[in-house]
Amino acid sequence: MTNKPILVARGLKRDYQQAGADNVLSVIRNVDLDIMQGEKLAVVGVSGSGKTTLLNLLGGLDDASAGSVVLGGKAWLDLSPSERAAWRNQHVGFVYQFHHLLGEFSALENVALPCLIGGDTVAQSKDYATELLSKVGLGDRLLHRPAELSGGERQRVAIARALVRSPSLVLMDEPTGNLDPKTADSVLDLLMTLNRDLNISFVVVTHDPLIAQRLDRTVTLIDGHLESNVD
Image (cartoon, rainbow, N blue to C red):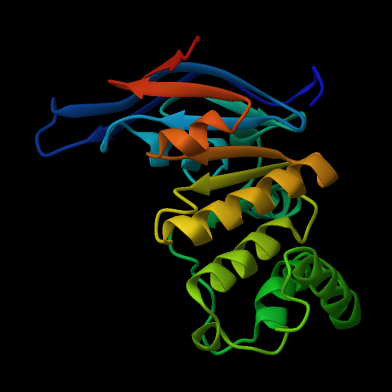
């Protein structure tokens, strides 16, 4: 990990208009956050505290009501929809509790897809996907479809897909929440290894304190405000 932030959020706020002109729900309130290159950050909080909303703001999937998110020197709000999609494809990976793999595609094809979208050739995309699947221990499962893989293997494919474009940042929403404890430990060990080898920053939303303890830093969302955890 270095002292150089790859993402800077300032004054971040996200409101949702509910029924009635004056009925506004504030989910994220005046959040400031720096994420350092190579950092592993845990985001914790009770259900409904806004953790997923925060990830969507950081990753440019949702627009803030106020404030800014700057990733790699570019603010999401300054980019057009096409520019934002291209920047996200290059710099951000996503891993969710449920893998969201395309069932009709093989593991290789699922992982190669972001490269194809990013403009790489078919041959290049397959080469990159093969390399990442080998890194996550699935070099012998390239042609298997999701239904032919175990839950842990499917999540490893999802992790490989998130990493295949060598992003600056990977955002994870309960990435082990749908796995049994043994498989979850294996996936977490994999993430630690990939972070060390690739120096990619991870932001992990989790309810599991054991996962949070293994990361570099933990912040807690309470009533939309972000609080740093200090031991």
